[in-house]
Structures are given as C-alpha cells and as structure tokens.
Image (cartoon, rainbow, N blue to C red):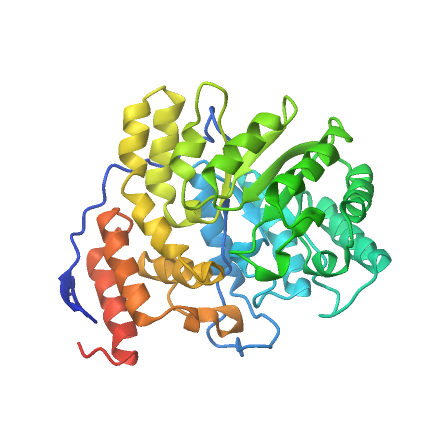
Length: 383
C-alpha cells in the first residue's frame, strides 16, 4: 500500500515516524491522569441523529484496555463519549457498568460521569434535577467507579442563584460514599452551560465552587476544569484546599498546566489524552523522573494537533477524536453514534491527518493513508 493521500490542498505522503513513545506500563507517580474515552459505534446499526445509541462493546472496551495499558485512568461516559450529543442515558449506564467491570479485571483506574440526561429536554424542577442526579450517582457507585458530578443543562436552565447550585451539589456530595470529582465545563464545550454556578462572571462562579468544596472537607477529590483559560485555572488551583486536585480539562494549554510551577500543578482529566496516549505516557514518565526537558519535547508536537482538534466549534472535537482512532487502527470504521461523523469538514480532518502524522500518532502510515483515501473519496476528493 502507498502512504500518499491526495488532500483537498494537494498530495501528502505520511512520514510513518512513530516518535519516542512509551511502552505499556504502570500508572504515573507524579500526576493523576484520566483519559476521557470515546465510544465506538456499531456501524451496522441505525446510529443516526435522534436514534438510541448502538455501541460496539468489544471495540469500545478494547480501546479502554489500550489506555489502561499505558498507565492512564479512564474517564468514562463523559463529554468525549458524546454525553448530550448522541449517547443516551440507558446506554451510558451500560457503558459505565461494562467499563467498571473491565477496570477491575485490568487493575485500571476509572471515574464516570453523573448527570441528569435521563430527564427529557426542556424545563425541570430543582427537585426533579436532584432526583435525576441521585439516580445516576447510585448507578455509578454501584458499578464501582469514582463519580464525576457533571454539569447539568437542566440545572443551568433552572437555577436562579448560586445557592441553588450549592444546595443541589451539597446534597449529592453528602450522599456520596466516597470523595467525588466536580466538573466545570465551559460554554465552548456546551453553550447551554453559560453562567454555570450561578454567575456569568467566572470569577464569581469560582467563589461558589471554592465555597462548595470548603463546606465539604474530605468529600471532594478534585475538580475538572474545562474553561480553556490557563491563567484562570492557575488562579483557581491556588485557591483549592490542601489535598483537593485541579484536574485540567484545558486541551489548549495542558502541557504547561500539568508541568506546573513552584506553587503547584494540575492533574489531568482530558479528552486529548486518549488521542495522544503513547507520547503523553512517555512525557508523564519523563516528568516522574524529573526530566522536564524530555517532558516538554515529547508533548510539544501534540499541542498544534490538540488546538486544531478542539478548535471552534469546540463541541465537535469528538468527530476528530474518532477519526484519529480510526486512522490509528483502534477501530475499523468512521461511524459515530448520532451520526456525528458529519461534525467536521473534510478540510478540517485533512489538516488533522497532517498534524497527527507530525506528532507521530499514526503507527501504520500505509493503513492510515488507505483509510484517509477511502474517506476523502466519499467527500469528493479524487484519489
């Protein structure tokens, strides 16, 4: 097979360079790192907009074993898995159950999203929102995963003050068996979450978050922050009580945030980690040994890819994640639940191919080129 692809802007030959990548190994010692994983759709099923999700369970769990093998924890049933964009709650619940069982068998870490998406779209009362959260919390705890209390579109639409958030989340935290992870997903990822925590100003919202954590000592493991604002994240990180982690969800600035400074660092709960697992694992192992130069060198080629992958409209990054998984050989098709494979243009995905090749993320250049040619042919780019 050839490694040359005719892209919309001309022919391109993949380098086939794998880079300096880690081999599978134990979890990292200096940072906690969860990779948010996508789901692999069943290409034979009716995975069209509005239809219940149909998942290829074998391929989905195989990808999670890939992540565990490199030392990452898995963040399950979260934004990357298309929560709110194709993955309905019955399927999400089954996904958590199956992944948590696989985590026990593999000895891997797992956390999982708790939300309110079993409620119908539209208005909901605070009591209905509390009950929906509580139902999902029980499901995640029963499965054996650490709960991540995800942002709720219903709560964002219903809450009228910071006190409403403090009440809903406070009860959930009190009812949790073990420490939970909070979740702050910015409007770039979901426009329906604008003004979350009861304040359109992130500084005011941060006051609410800090008060919530301080009011429940020992019950909050950390908070995942996805506002794509490096300066804001560092400021919030420095306000957290001792022992409470800041899990960066900043796919634009993760190398510097995880590296940290003299006053601390961020841990990670990131969608991009699933796409860059081998070099990211190598970088984190370099960090474990104090090799900061090696860490920087290994992650530097991944950053242009991440910034393109998560470019506006950011919420369609999932399409690029699945495209990369297909090119890299982790699944045998480019089909997504909810038909979301149409979320990015051929030009966007062609650029992603170049960046993935430059970052050494395509272990079999001929396979990746073959698949890219097949995709681009259907998009009208003659091969």
